[in-house]
Image (tube, rainbow, N blue to C red):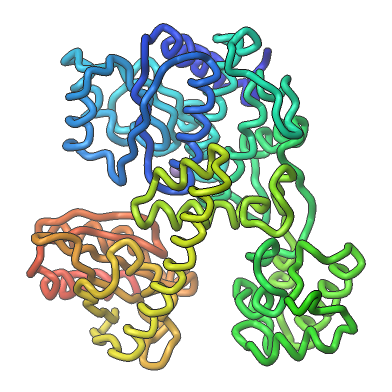
Length: 489
Ligand SMILES: [Mn+2]
């Protein structure tokens, strides 16, 4: 049976064959929404193929993590959503006979090759916008079903609305691949493209994904209507975005049943007519308050819905699902995120929701702290040191969200420090797209300035990070300020 992405078919089949030859497999995956869905896809596929396995997660696949993996007695290690970038380290272990790596990843490979390496970048497919780690894992899972012939495996059973056929060839796992791609920010211009779109097609055929044009706001399943509008700031609509009273007044003026049984209704519970009423009023308001046409177009995008999940839950919407997973990952509860992906709708789901609530509270407390204490302004940047009062895993988001608050400028990048451990400090930097148009590249700033003080870093132009030795913060700021002066002059 043909796989979803013909260019990857041969390599995926060879990787699958290698996995089937193994007595047992160690599955190692990255901790984020894409990595968690990758692991869920891979572990479902291994289980259905009757291959015994164990799963481990790593935030970073550094030398120490690879050494730990090598120290286990597994002869076959399946890496998902990482592994390509660490092929130099992994290759040395392979040469030493520690294990045979099988890799399903989409990140830039290190300068080294290995036989069982499934990565879209090796086949001219864009790993940032066309296929995620979960997508690569899905391609592998589809091949594994063919190689192992799941129809004969005991573990295949019909359940829920998913057909036995979709489970037998692993097409039901397309839903998780879509959640991973969305979580990896691969939807651009409002939808998924290329290889991702092929996976969406398979998911639609299998009955696990529905797509349609919808309002491009976050929280259509779970947010009460006024909050849905108030918190939607990607397209700023004056008098509604970031405006609690304004959002309420706007809804009040629509002649709509806003509450039911004393509770605010949610977008997912509206009829199509009601959705139409809100959407056209929103567009009308945007037009009359001078929002540019290009921005107004962005109010509508493709929604990816998981129809087997209950209406009004995070799990039904790919972007809310991925946010929930990221919350588990940020607090190092990969077990919880994986549990949710694998269908645990009791303990794991409850725990994940609690982590998301706590995450949102931590963010708002962090933003309050930074706004209250203020930032220090240098010529070309502004910075603050949170010490241990903001977790290093969220300090970057906090910094980005605090920009624009009193005393915190949007016209220069912000750099945030937070304690990582006794000897290291995490540095996070955030800019704006406006600054990027003027030449800002925070990836270069973080990389260069951190290496000057004996650390390392990188990332994207608009958001990047680094780790530096404790005590080097001021030296780092000085160097970063100089580099930014050159970039923005
Ligand atoms: Mn990824």
